[in-house]
Amino acid sequence: MKGVELTSGKLMSEVAREVLSLDLEQIAVISGPNLAREIAGEQPTATVVASASVETAGFVARACASPYFRPYTNDDVVGVELSGAVKNVIALGVGIAQGLGYSWNTSATLITRGLVELTRLGLALGARPDTFAGLAGMGDLVATCASPLSRNNTLGHHLGKGMTLDEALAATGGTAEGVKTSQSVLALAHKHEVEMPITAGVVAVVTGQMSVDQLGPALLSRPQKAEGV
Image (cartoon, rainbow, N blue to C red; front, side):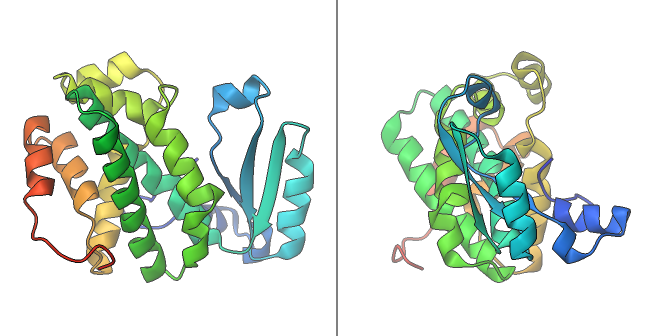
């Protein structure tokens, strides 16, 4: 499971701790460029296991390691977990752009600026910046935004082709977490006064406030500024 709870803004590790009455050191989260079908096919990949406890992270990493699945460990639970949530939102945006017929320049722009949004929110929540340049951040973002195996990218593609949200959900099958997560992520961003224009645009589309044709012009018409700001 991944995402941000709609009513509380809590990450799933926080929900699990609360519901199961666990100590912080008992929680580990896993995220990375890990499309399930490719793992099932034993295609090589890596992932990140994060926990406040070095021992817990190591235990989980050893338990899931295999010749084709390489886990790394760190202690940035918030950064790893937030990456697994926000990347689904950006993948929706990339899928919408691809469905509209835009190609790799547009996709690369959305992925890169999506990483900026993820990093901004992560830093506001106390995560480490290096997490977002790693497997859980950039790695998972690229896999989820670029692969046709990604349900969130596929759903966005259907929306870009002109389907309604209900039609797109039915055509995609399975669960596309980015639809609900986009709204809770945006609420979290507003709470911490973090600017996330791609996320805001995705929310506007999935809630019917904006058409897919309006999304690109809305993003491109934003005031010019320095890249690192």
